[in-house]
Image (tube, rainbow, N blue to C red; front, side):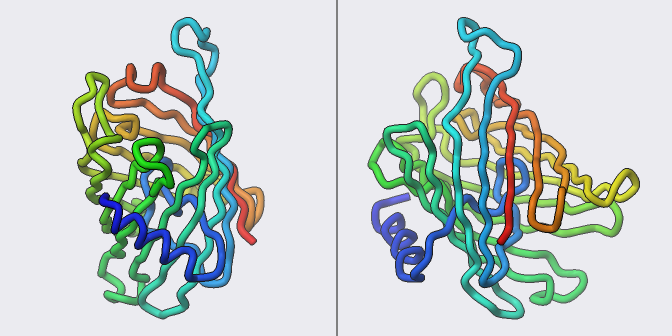
Length: 241
């Protein structure tokens, strides 16, 4: 994403008068969900290896603290935006925004469409990954929700293990509530193409302790494990208020 687009997204967030965060997502890829107008979402996420010595790739990534809010109240169209803080890092601040249709936009049989950007960083060639994406999703009866999309990002930042640019590709996702087991149980899996640090297959389960608190635990299998040193477990806590 060029500088003009980056500034545009930052301006959208700042002019709205509030702070926002990590985009509503499945496991790692964005979902077509949008935070409802006037509500906030706090996300705390950490990725870490388990039972692996540091000498052979054991590590923990910086923890992400995100605050997201919805700021448009329309029957067929919604917008959310956010700010993420990743610590400990030298360049912790990044932004995101998303616009999506609602279920009412195309009727009962229509898809939900979303466009957005995330990891729009504040420091050139440090954290400006600048992922831009478009997605469509459709819930099919009892089977669950299917998501498909495409993304592109900063070619100078999204590179494979050899240092070659790898900054675009397909997005796929599937998620479903599991009422056969328990109404509070959720399952999700998603895929992001490419062999940069973003490319991975991720799957996991979530448990809703209440309408406002959910814990998600999953596993991230990178398309190129060497780019991240090792595959990791992901731990995500979500709070709505």
